[in-house]
Length: 106
Image (cartoon, rainbow, N blue to C red; front, side, top):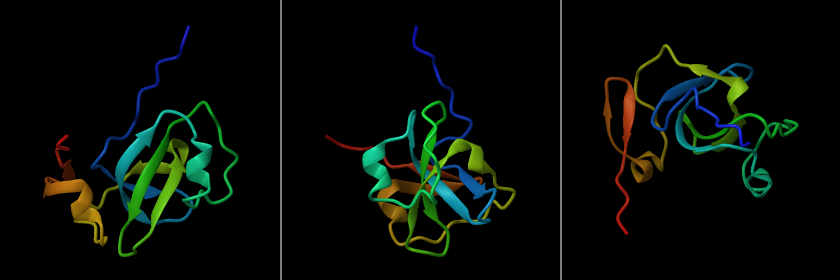
């Protein structure tokens, strides 16, 4: 039987990193570690744990995108907007401390 995972965070949510103390916004969620991503995005030398979720974040006040495990994140108390050069590629608006994802057209 396959375990059903539930994400503690959602796309568009602003989170903080427990160790590195940066803010970011979630742009995607993987239900297991994708090794091909590890070559493209910095994972800060984590040993990939297949049993937890991994998140793609845009880091506030930088041009960086990062791939981190769920255990490194917590919901941010700071509800102000994120500054990132590709933010508009992912989100249509910012409302009540959360970004609204753009609808993709086929």
